[in-house]
Amino acid sequence: MNSPLIARKLESLAHCLRRIEDKKPVRLSDLENNYDLQDIISVNLERSIQLCVDIAAIIISERDLKTSNTMAGSFKILEEAGILPDDLSVKLQKAIGFRNVSVHEYHLCIGRFRNPDFGGTISCNQGFRDSNSPSMAFFASMKRLL
Image 1 (cartoon, rainbow, N blue to C red):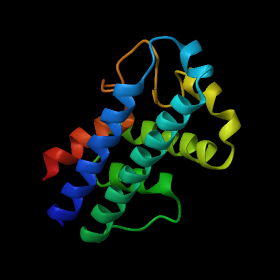
Image 2 (cartoon, rainbow, N blue to C red):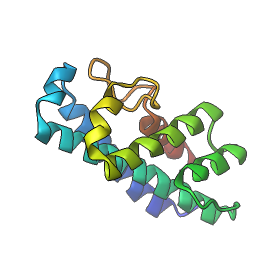
Image 3 (cartoon, helix red, strand yellow):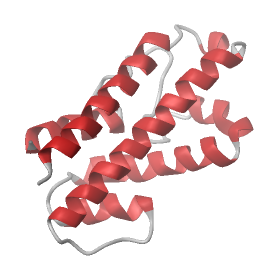
Image 4 (cartoon, rainbow, N blue to C red):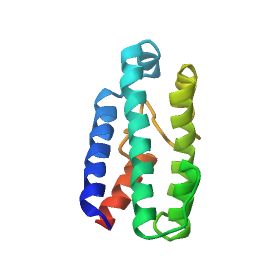
């Protein structure tokens, strides 16, 4: 595995997760009323999800696994190869949906922040760095591989 490249990606992922944790409001209303905060959180969520995709692509390439033509499919491939647990793969695949909405239809994101079934992406009353966070769980899984 290309550990230096993955290590750099993991450092960037950790930075994004820290930014989200540092800026996460106590109440959803604080998020709804603060567009700067929405931007900081959504951009760092997008980046964290994209970094997970990048890391998955590196692992797929280096292990000569079959490739996917979708970002979500990359996590399914890692699941099938025994690299990711099923539940984490599903959460990461759902996170791709959030990323796509955030990038392409930003005005719909606040509803996604509220939806606990959307891969556990963010909750205003619960720490981001918990077992429900797909990016944090992926971060921990990839750190163990290095």
